[in-house]
Image (cartoon, rainbow, N blue to C red; front, side):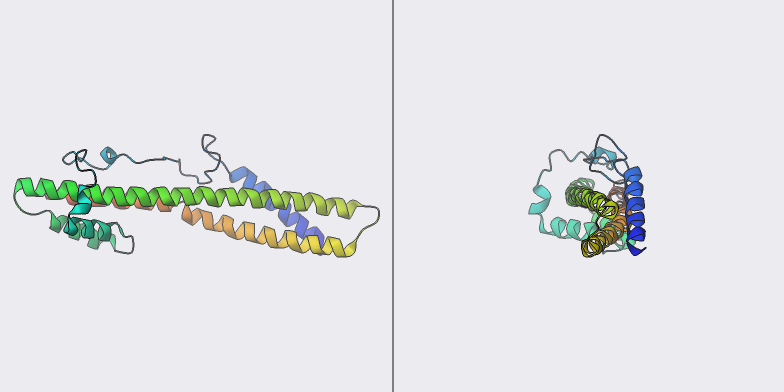
Length: 204
């Protein structure tokens, strides 16, 4: 009876994952309900002075580098980060433009890279889930065949049942985690948008 329950749970798990995985056929390793946008464009967040000529210059300004790193850190409350960004944009109009360009370029670069790392991690996670799913499917097929055999090996069936139970449990725990992880890229984008708005406020 116990093995039958394990088989049933594993079959349900595989069926559920099969219906939820690869929502975007263009990106078969992307498991999230959110549409995958591989890269970000600065223009989607920034209406201030063009940053095309900034390059890595923001890294050469110690104050900008330190502030951009602090603002991008998600452990810093967004309200505090917005205040710090707005307060930094001070001085003459030219000085404000210079600071705004450098600071936004730094924040954009840091958060864009962080988002890319998170998305790569999500896809690696998804591939591991696919590998585990395939292993569960193989174990399930093997276990059913052993159960249907004329001469059954009870010890082997019990051992395989334990392996199937463990793998199914790990698979389910990972599946519950992915819903949280899938929100992280959007959270980063929201932070970037809010910081860009805060930086631009004192330019008006």
